[in-house]
Amino acid sequence: MNKTKVLLVEDEANINRLITEFMTSRDYDVLSFEDAPEALEHVRQNGLLHIALIDLALPTMHGFELSGKLKAMGDVPIIFVTSTGDTDTIVQGLRRYADDFIVKPFDLRELEARVQNVLSRMPS
Image (cartoon, rainbow, N blue to C red; front, top):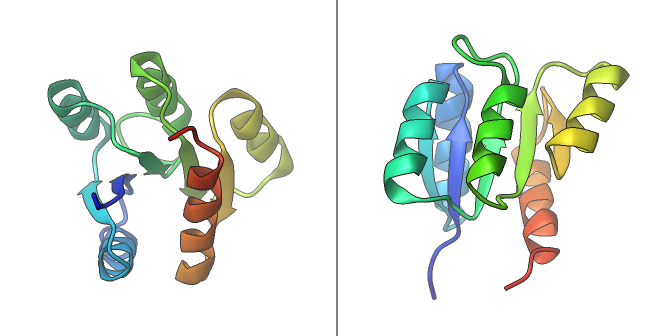
């Protein structure tokens, strides 16, 4: 059985490391980036992954912009993992780009449950 491939774009090194280590320990194959352009280049060269976890407040490109570029490449489910928790941002994200939204701080088990839930709704 192939591992679920997760694209993680999170510029906070500690959070990036925690999510990567946790998801890897749960048997996910995590490709993590702290920079949106690097993540986009990887996807352009290697194709989309099964799911993307994206921070909104990235230094070189807003998470909405990154998500739009990923969606233009194909139908990849996206979960925003961010400290931006105002209702307008959440609603905009869910309406335009994301399949789910989780606000920092969060429990890593909740993140995994959200990933599983989103993936369960995707066609095989």
